[in-house]
Each structure stands twice: as C-alpha cells, then as structure tokens.
Image 1: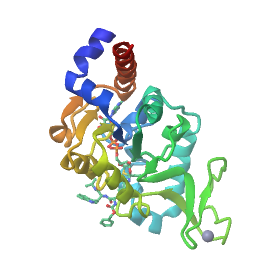
Image 2: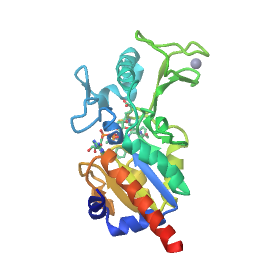
Image 3: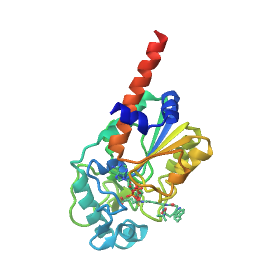
Image 4: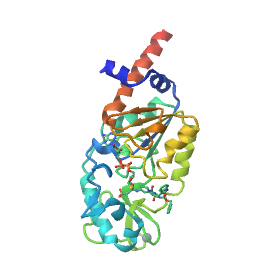
Length: 262
Ligand code: BJW
Ligand code: ZN
C-alpha cells in the first residue's frame, strides 16, 4: 500500500500537501458514488426518471409547470438517500479540517453526506434535498424527517406551495454561495476537484479560478473530464480509495517532521 501510495502521488504533490495551509475541495456526485448515491452522467441511474432525462425533470420549467411530478422525483430520491452513509472519501475530507489551517469545502451535492461525515461550513452550491423552500414567502424548512408522498406540501408559515430547496437548471445559485466559493478558490494553495464531470457551471469555474490565482489543482476521478487538461495532476481512480492515501502520507510526513525535530 505504501509503495503504491509513493508511486501514485507525485513527490511534488506530497511536498505541497505536507506544506499547505489553505486547501479547497470541490466535490461532485462521484464522491458519494461509493455510498450508493447514483451519479447523473455516464450511466448513473439518476439520469432518467420515468423516461424523462434529469436535465428536463431537474429544470426550473418543471417546477413552474409540474410541481407534483418534481416532488414525486425528489421523494423517490429522498427515500433512496435516507439510509445511505458517508464513505471513506467524505470521512477523509472531514478529517482534513484538523489537518489544515483553512479547509474550504464546496459541494455540488445535495445529499448532506459531507455534513454527516462531520464536515462543517460546507458551501452547498446546489442546495439540499433535505430542505424545502416556499414558492410564496421563500421560507426554508427542514423536511428530512417528513414524509409527504402525495402532491405538493404546504408551507408551515404561510400555507403556500413548497418546492425542493435545490438549484435546478436555469436557476440562480443561493445568494452569496458562488461568491464565497470563488473567494476561497482565489486564496487556496491546493485545490482538489473530486468526483465531478465538471460540465455544470458556474461550479466548474471554481477550479479554473483557483488555477488562475496560482493554486495547484488536483483532480480525483476514474474518468477524465473537460477540466483534466487544466489540472496540475489527475489521480485516476475512486475517491474512496485515493483520498485515504493522503492520510497515510500526512501521518508519515508528520512523523518525519517530528523525527527531524527530535
Ligand atoms: C467518481 C466516482 C468515484 C464516479 N470517485 N469520482 C456557462 C456555460 C454553459 C452553460 C452555462 C454556463 N453558466 C450557466 C449555464 C447553464 C447551466 C449549465 O451549466 N449547463 C451546462 C450543463 C451546459 N447552469 C445552470 O443553469 C446553473 N445556474 C446558473 O448558472 O444560474 C445563472 C443563470 C440563470 C439563468 C440563466 C442563465 C444563467 C444551475 C446549475 C444547477 C445544476 N443542478 C443539478 C441538479 C440539482 C438538483 C437535482 O439533484 O436534481 O445539479 S444538475 C446535476 O449536475 C446536479 C449536480 O450537482 C451537477 C453536477 O454533476 P456532477 O456532480 O459533476 O455529477 P456527474 O454525474 O455529472 O459526474 C459524476 C462524476 O463522478 C463523473 O465524472 C464520474 O467519472 C465520477 N465518479 N464514481 C470519484 N467513486
Ligand atoms: Zn411560505
């Protein structure tokens, strides 16, 4: 395992990882794949719902025209996600909070698994499947424990129609979320891009911003993406297998530093 780690993670990346103070992670559906969450693209089975491609059902127009169907699709997914647990990738990223002075975590995922693993202050660019938002008064409600299998649930404050508090195609991101993520991208030294196809904007511009500001950008994905050529390193493989390798490495580096000091 250690010999493999040594070969797989370059000397340059080992050095940067052990010295970095400010690290940013951008995650996508692939980080949750090993927990059993279906990805959207590349044959993931969130790709189609009742014959409708997800880019149609997960679109602003559907909320306006077919809100009960949108709820049916989200209730189905809530049911599938309810029992899923964070995997080794979520857990490693959560531990990086103690490893680095500053660890920013920006996710496109709506599943809440980073938080379940212990990550704090997660920037959720595309919202959360566990919240609903009122179409009338804009109030947000935690609906994690609630079951409403039929029709459109009513707002607990004003009785208006609730919708899933997620960002669909053609909708704006939550106020300030992208700006905060972009600020973190501008100041980080090392940026990990984990499990995203990097085709959805503006999320996919976060690593571009980090790279333009001088960060070392590392992609973790079993497949190449449109971002791969921009990255300083591409670690091809599953997030749940690759990210834990950095833990071995950081412990080893810490030990080395301690030995040098003693
Ligand atoms: C593994 C793995 C393992 C597998 N380990 N890896 C600029 C240029 C072009 C278009 C636009 C642009 N700016 C805006 C747009 C339009 C649009 C967009 O980007 N379209 C492109 C697709 C062409 N963007 C928007 O509409 C955004 N809004 C916006 O920009 O507002 C301003 C505006 C408003 C009005 C008009 C104009 C501008 C909003 C985007 C919202 C995206 N929403 C969704 C659905 C959320 C709700 C739901 O769940 O239903 O978010 S789409 C879907 O894609 C979901 C995801 O968060 C998002 C990204 O997907 P992700 O995470 O990358 O997953 P996959 O499945 O694509 O990839 C998985 C990856 O994991 C793969 O690479 C695998 O290889 C890998 N993998 N196993 C590691 N074990
Ligand atoms: Zn309301």
